[in-house]
Amino acid sequence: MTDIMPKGLTGKLIRRVALLLIIGYFFNYLDRTAVSVAALQMRADLGISAAAFGLGAGLFFVGYALCEVPSNILLHKIGARVWMARIMISWGIITLLTCFVQGEVSFYIMRILLGIAEAGAYPGILLIFTTWFPSKMRGKAIASLEILVLLALAGGAVGLGAVLNLDQFLGLAGWRWVFIVAGVPAVVLGLLVLFFLPESPQRAKWLTSAERTWLVNTLAAEAQEKEKLGVSTLRSAFRNTRIWYLSVLYFMMVVGFWGITFWLPQIVQSEFEGISDFGASALSAIPWLMAIVALIFVSSSSDRRNERRFHAAVPLVIAAIALIVSVAVANPWVALLGIGVAAAGQRSATPVFWNLPAGLVTGAGAAGALALINSVGNLGGFFGPYILGFFADLTGSNSGGLIFFAVCFVVAAIMIVAYKQPKLSASASGPFAPAESAPVGTMSK
Image (tube, rainbow, N blue to C red; front, side):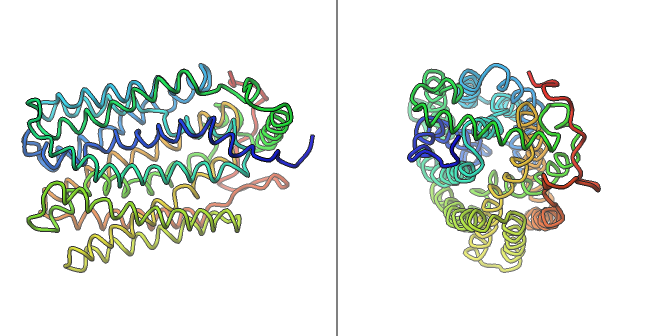
């Protein structure tokens, strides 16, 4: 085996494996956040209060968290192609059906069902990346996902905001068209994944013999190294204190992100008096465009220096400060800029964070651990929107919720600095030591 990666292999893997998944993830975020744009008309149309909207937006993550680990385990057992296609097709159908909600109860039900349908999407993509991309390639692949998230949030804010102008076209309210337009592409992409996503490097006929040999051997060597950390089986993943620590850490990172995401168009509308629905949704794109620039800079710097903790912690502290400034200064443009810096800090820290668990897990352990971290962390997506809606109803202002998010970002930054990645050359000890390794193959199928 040669240690030299075959020329052009990275580009080939991105085109053949990652591209469909990355596009799918773009529409994944478009589907789950379409409700933030639709709310500009939907709340008034259906008589939904701020707290009820926050609860409904957050209920997505209840269904998501409950089904996340089982979904990722099924992906590991059934195969990436079939299961990812199922995920995409089902979330597209549920998004389409959301256009028929009539009140709070039906809104709650559809949000829970959307969470169940989407469960496993992000950790499933991460799992697929671990089976195709060696660690030296994986950072860019993960960062590309995060950039697509931000493009979906920015482009969705503008594009879906324009869809609101279809109000009463064919007798349907504009907010109902938002869910129709967001849902259709996911169904189409799911069918493309079913027919075109390859299962594994061993079965990829488009790889040359040299490319396949290098890729399979490199991935196998990395898997053997990770097994020494004891997180190669499902049981060991759930017993590992580091995995649970990272789950709580990710929760603190995510609370503020989802609170801002689901409420941003409404925050903008409350700050800029008299602004139209489309104007509010268009201005909501600015924070996410700012975040793209920050994400590219921080991810590149982190990879170049091979440093993770401070490249994640510092942006989170900056995000917290920016939120406090947005609350303290009574100027709508300062508030929007502060939220933009906060979004940039949180999103630029996210791909850096995911390098931490990716260096711990392999096999069934990867399926369980990545899903566990994502599901526990994304429970913050339930609390974040609800907390902001609660404060909005209680005080008539978004300030209390934004300050709460700032505190969560600071706690996350402290936890990241306190975390130390284990080294294979020495036995780990202390509260974050990996669990003892189970016999190879235990619960791995």
